[in-house]
Image (cartoon, rainbow, N blue to C red; front, side):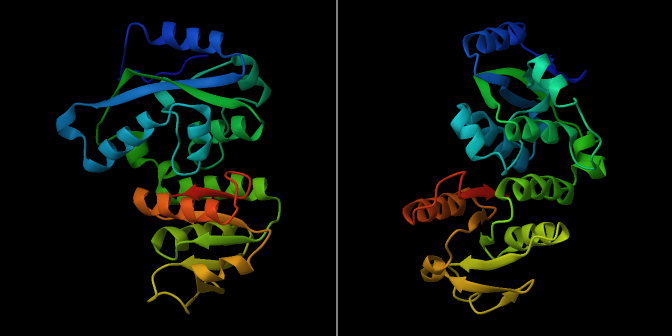
Amino acid sequence: MARMDADDIASPTRLECQVAFLDAHSDIVACGTGIRYFPRRLVRDGARRYESWINGLVSPAAIERDLFVECPIPHPTLVVRATAFEQLGGYLEVGWPEDYDLILRLWEAGYRLGKVSEVLLRWRERPDRLSRTDPRYADDAFRQCKAHFIRRRIAGRPVVICGAGPVGKAFARALLAKEHHVTAFIELDPRKIGQTIHGAPVVPWSDMRCYRDVYALAAVGSPEARREIRERLLAAGFREPEDCCAVA
């Protein structure tokens, strides 16, 4: 099953390339392609960063690693095996983006996701896109979606959030809304250490050794800070995504 929006422009070889990709990779159940926003005069800095980020996620491992940062497969490029789509009940009305929800349910079911690296779809930017106007695509709706699937994945394990800034606080609220409390916030900024946020202490990185059998969320907006936190977590013996993941 192939997805596309009526006002976008697909390369004439898009479907050919994606079907060939799935035929060659029997272990992958769904794939996307690279994208380019147009017209460029309407493409803001945030969309350009997203374009660059999403085009950089190609391998199944890279897609899974950043699955909770943003949706790693652009919905207008999605091709999914119909058997898997039907097995999971197709799209669901759940109060958050139905495309992201489908991708996360595929992942949760153990399916692998891939991508054709070539840019095969031109994605139209316009101010009245549903992703700009519909409340199901608001930042809070995305966080609720991420928190829902992360909470099911970690199965009751205590959570520590690496980052006590706006992203970390917002994600803590999303988890609290689902009755999953945060054990601690881990911080590098000495000005934040010693605070209490949503009932959890803000402690320095040196205290990370005190928290065992926890699930760690790298909750920062900056890609550079996200990379540093990942490196610190991996050096401390955490495995991604078994023991930690990045969120935004």
